[in-house]
Amino acid sequence: MSPKIYPIDLAIMPQLPDLEKIKQIREKLGLSQRELASRAGVSQSLIAKIEKGAIDPSYGNVKKIFQAFEEVLKKGIVDAEKTGIHLTVGDLATRGVVSISPDDTIAEAIERMVKGRFTQLPVVVGDRVVGSITDDIIRNYTIEQTRNKEKSYEEVMKTPVSEIMEAPFPILSEDTPIELASLHLQRQEAILVSRKGVVIGILTSADFLNIGLKR
Image 1 (cartoon, rainbow, N blue to C red):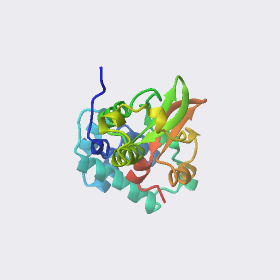
Image 2 (image 1 turned 120 degrees about the vertical axis):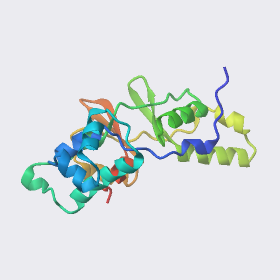
Image 3 (image 1 turned 60 degrees about the horizontal axis):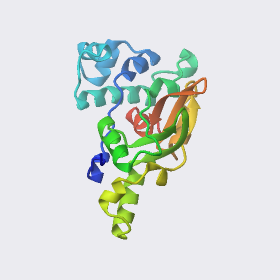
């Protein structure tokens, strides 16, 4: 069966913050639900429902919550040295990693990105990370090939990921301080997070920007 064909710009979609992180970060920062709600300008009941997974909040409310986290961090309301509160890549990472095989096609990579609202995917063979692919890589390759008439759009979509993938994203242990992760994310779109050598999550530039930690 031939792969589905998607317009290339469908892969460029904003990645929403992981709602499961809200409780983790709130507790790490030592905030009660009431304090977080007050800082975010939302109701405490909304925070409680989000943390229980009982509601699908609007993007606007989720943005307010992450902006509240940002303000707490920027203003030094939480003193990590005094309180012992230290955020790590494991605290912010999205658990579970959606990946692609090098033998899969560009069309399949786009389909996976669109479905998960991702802008990047690690390329995996078995339990080994062998490369990475992003929406920018796909876009640039498509423009280059079709502009030079080397391939039709349909042929580009059937191209194996292995032909355009780049080096793997860095892999950091889940207990790595976020300050170190920020250095990697100045050069990379994502970091893979591991526990005892096994990849368990992913941290993207968007995740960092959502709470204002990328300096």
